[in-house]
Each structure stands twice: as structure tokens, then as C-alpha cells.
Length: 239
Image (tube, rainbow, N blue to C red; front, side, top):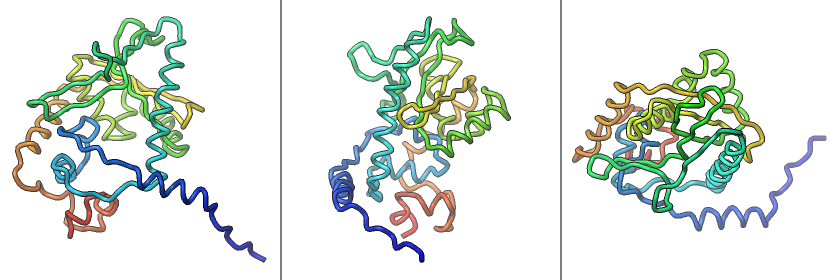
């Protein structure tokens, strides 16, 4: 006889409700480097102009928290490798970052790292991404198939764009990405080379979006297109 589904714990249900109720969508007054690689310019334009979007659910908020905690674990472990140096604070004690295009385009890096065993003299932009089991396995597979210097572009175009922008504004030609499971249970990495032409196209893209006085074109006119279906601005965009 099939078992009936068990009701969810009421205490956990309340914990999820509290997480969703207390979330605060921090509106940025700039386009972030982490966003510029998004395939839909209208999505970026909506976010920059503070249009209302669908709120995150509790599970998504907790994944964000996992990412912040895992970043700290990974950086701590990297610092224990002999010869490795990491700088992740600005002179005023804040996070390392940049602002460009009149302060309307910017971002913050996880750090600058030097002393990698495979490239001890070369400073790299350091980024840490926390992913699930599926994404982690896919990343490792792509590193094996394409080599570490092409893996990031194949794995995630948004992260690749972010890496290129950071290298451009930090005047570095290498990027070091650590991909980790939550809590740093396992880690993998790749290095990416600077592509100045690609980076400049992203800067031009940001400038066009900033100058746009009306919504840019949609990535698709079909609201069931996979990018549109899961977009937090789907209602305001497609009505």
C-alpha cells in the first residue's frame, strides 16, 4: 500500500514564512557586473529602474545564505595553501569593487589572489560560486572536456561575462573561479583568460541600457520562452 505524504513540520513552515516576510530587495543604483551577462537587456533595464519583481521564496533566500557562508569557508582554506595571498578588502575596510560609467556600472569581487600553485607569480581576480550537486558535476565535466581556460564560458555565460568585466576594471588578465558545494564539502576550479574585445562589448551594452529611456526589446515575444517563463519581471514585461 503506497504511503501517504507526510505533512510538513509546522515549525519549518513558519521558518520559511519568516524568511520570505523579512526579505528586503536591495535596490542598487547601478547595473551590476553580475547582471550584465543576462541575455535579456529588458530584464537588466527593469532591475536598474527598480520595477517590481516576483519575491524570492525561502529556499532561494537560503541558497543565497549558503553562498555567502561557503565563500568565507573557501577563502579561508585557500589562505592555508603555502604561498597563497588573498586581498578581499578595500583600504576603507569594505569589499573590493569598481564603479564606472558615472558610477552607474559596478560590482564587487570576492578577492584578488596571488600564489596559485600552477601560476605563482600571476595575480588573478578571485570568485567563488556555491552550486548544487548537478551544477558541480557539470562544471567538472566541462573542465575535463574543454580544459580549464574554456570551461567557464561553456558552463555559465553570465559568470563568464562577470569575470571579463572584473578583469577589465581591475586591469588583470587572469580570473580564478572556485566552484564549491554548500559548506565547501567539495571544490573545483578553473582559470580564465581576459578577452578585451568581449569585455568592451559588455561595457557598451551597459552604456546602451543606461541611456535607454524606454524598455529595450524583449529577448523573446513568447511569454513561454524558457528565459521569460522564469523571469521575475514576466508579469510587468508580458502583461
